[in-house]
Amino acid sequence: MFLAYAMAPGIINSQAKNSPPAIDQQKLEKIEKAGGRVMSIAQNDDRLEVDFHLQDSDVTSESLACLEGLKNLYSLNLGKTKINDAGLAHIKGLTALNRLYLQETKITDKGLINLKGLSNLTYLNLYGTAITDQGLDNLTALSNLKNLYLWQTKVTENGINKLKKSLPNVNVVAGWDQEQKK
Image (cartoon, rainbow, N blue to C red):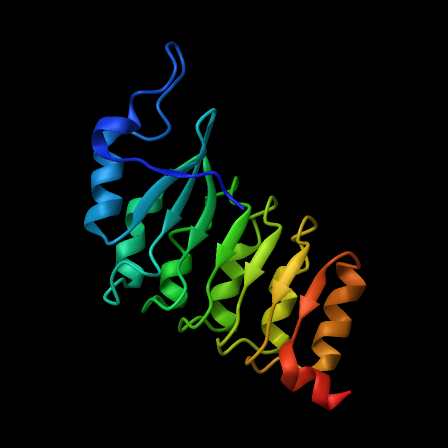
């Protein structure tokens, strides 16, 4: 659970003296204009959480261009937005990213290639997407991945077993559908 507080324009630069601001005002305004909400994960931590999922149903892949270059992004929630594979190209450089929520988006196997460099990713939610076993091959380099949510996807038990050979410590939640197939 995050200890978060909203980072309104007046609050964002009011951190301790001599510490760099978590995000500059111009970047904050671009994210908010695109429909995102920016929060710090804690008062004494400059890592950020950006949430698009409840803000506006019109968030698209183009909306994510505002995220490029964020060095301290810890969590990104894009669930239930209109993003697709093209949108993931905007986040492939966010190497500090730890948590990524892509549930109920138009993401497919093709887009997952953009996640290969996210080496700090520990949580990935792909619930309700068109991901298949083939797409899981793009996740094998995510050695820190601990939790992967795949229910209501096209992933099979064989695909999960293959992924677990590369990532033995990953906890895969495949949902009720996978439980029935066993």
